[in-house]
Image 1 (cartoon, rainbow, N blue to C red):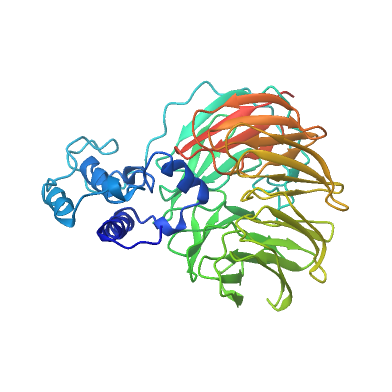
Image 2: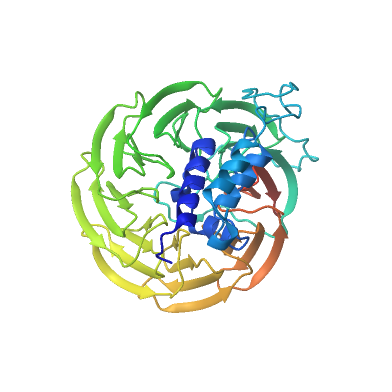
Length: 470
């Protein structure tokens, strides 16, 4: 409201304590996090979702200090202080689920997965390129695999933190990171955990597979390189700024963008920095690679084309509105969607605008760019199909709920997951909804599609496999 009053100071104190206890910066919450919790009158996710070491009493104090409405917060600083003073010295009195000790204060025993359901019958497949968020380094948003309804639930695997990044699948192995600080490797056929790697910081980005190595960043701004077989660490390199975006691999380099405003090219073997492009704004979206160019869009809507070998700035283009969605690149073009609802198609060689269209609805999910069509998902559940040639609308429809996860085009099927965790399959030619399946947990990240399988991570920390018709 633009006012400052004692309740504002209590809010600031509550947010600072929240950050100190959970290591989750409230300023980095997505717009979907904000909307979902504001509907409940609270500003942030419950603190115990981030760490079980926060007691229920402390969680309540943080929530009361940061209520959305000032009148719902503590009436005075003295009232908040009185509640802080009543906290018990020992905050946990229950048995630790990992080590079974009373008053455990930081057990590092790896979390145990929940009992698996009966494994789905999984067909053998020949080795092929890995499938992940946006499919490949161009982030085009479509896959050559054909996912067909109906989708049936297979196994599920439980981590101990929200899954913010997309899983990836390669040769029958699923790799997924979690905010519980672990990267997991699971065998698709039997839902058997092969290994896990501890990063010592929350993981929100999608891992990138290049050769036999997985690359990913963490909340402390460290890039990790881990062997895909066995999970042994190859190297760790600190960068400037938290890393929420997934990396891209091309021209023998690993390209990473950080919240500190850096786009960095690293060597896969040692993590040595080859070039570092410094920007004045943070990067929330992942870089894309096409035609020896790195395409990046910063938070303020500035799109850049960087030479992949040197990091030299080739061109800059300003789109209207802020950017949270990764650009999609295909066939010499890049498509950028913004929070003000605009979609812009650029020629990547010169950074020239071919056309721009306003859809009128904030877009934070990455769009899909194909040879003939464009698909975009608005935050309020609106879906659009446009002509690639000039942006002419082909169809528009609306699905229930809000959309944060980027849609995927699988053959002629558009795969969409709303924030409530409902999986929807739509006909890409008409936008007609043909199939729905409720996971029962919020989903903010895109799934991985691999043949008849669809693997999805949820904000409740579960990894779910759905199997489609062969």
